[in-house]
Image (tube, rainbow, N blue to C red; front, side, top):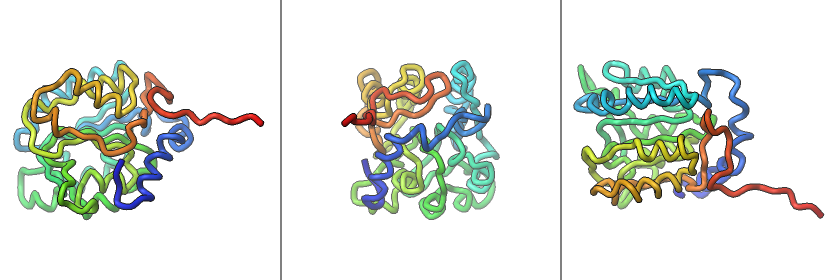
Length: 241
């Protein structure tokens, strides 16, 4: 559990305990509860989009999700901010290039730096509900020797995202997310249990050593097929006197 300040940590735990009250009931079929947004980056990120994100998006429909895939020419910061791609979905997955202070989905054309997502912009995002951000990009979870306010993952938590899973160092083609996501969605595990379960199966380095979770490991996100569940997290019970 990490944050800019101690208040961020308290909020992470509060969203775990009061998740159902914060999220409210799933009233819209294509609303936040059922949205799973995939973003793949340009510059070889298309491979992950083609062979993982698009097929997995089709599979997620069986579980009640409404997936959306944003790829080439649809992944700039300006466009994704306009469409609330990162703040308007229950689950967000990013495949592409990254670093500890930004990630760069849009590389083609002019001025790719201005189209990147960095801490200066992400700190102003507003997550009204506890979203989950998953990425196989390199270095986005690195915090050693870096102030918390300069890490893109911690910045998302500061803005209200409730879970960030990424890598502290460079990764390769072994950095898949399917096992982790299946533990969350199919097996209905908390984020901590899901990451632990993945590491029991996918042991290929370097991802095995460098993939980490920022957030409350007891947090169990809402899924359309599972609803709000208490699996893996504390339960608040009223004490009778």
